[in-house]
Length: 286
Image (cartoon, rainbow, N blue to C red; front, side, top):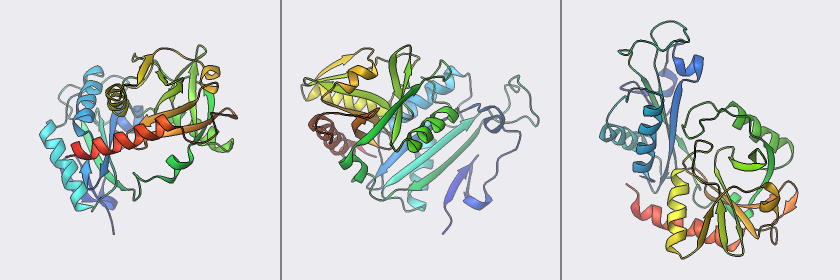
């Protein structure tokens, strides 16, 4: 059965969804996005994603396509109409189209384009990958400097994931000036002697919604946290490591550039943080 998707005010069968070939998201990657997880038919941390979406739009001087309440209603209708129990809602806003290709922004009265669709992901919470843990390679970070804006410029992260796949691994961590920035689609952490280490927020990394929640929960669990720069070599010498993202939650890392961490299995802190995050997020889901 065809999915119902949302395109510029209309709910449509996916095969009927259309966007102009002159849309700047298509021509210029002039667009931002968010991905919200769905567990038990409810949205996980919708408020955080809505706030970050507005920040991304503001940073790019892009108009908001609708109110937060309208956005929530669209999310809920798509989840219901598509029967999503566990899965994702993808949202993308572009600067729209004024009918031609031009590097200069279109006039201010050009409406933005907004599209949303769902992805059905049974077993999202009870992921086999989380039980096994991820193997990571490191690659040079050559992305643009405003990684705090969640744009659709995802070619290099996609290439990074393919580099990892070709190496027989699961993902890649990006390295700039000798220090880890983040993963291809996640924030990166390691744990040494009970201390969680992760890079501090800046324009260099995405301000992860799951990152914020997990660090808050870790602090509430009396775990020590250090937000500082770190190297691949430091992470390789750690007791354990993990990543966080909206779609994978807390994902243990068991190997970095061929070096096994700890026993080569998911570590206790990453495993416990995943349990806490899923439990608390389900309680707060809307």
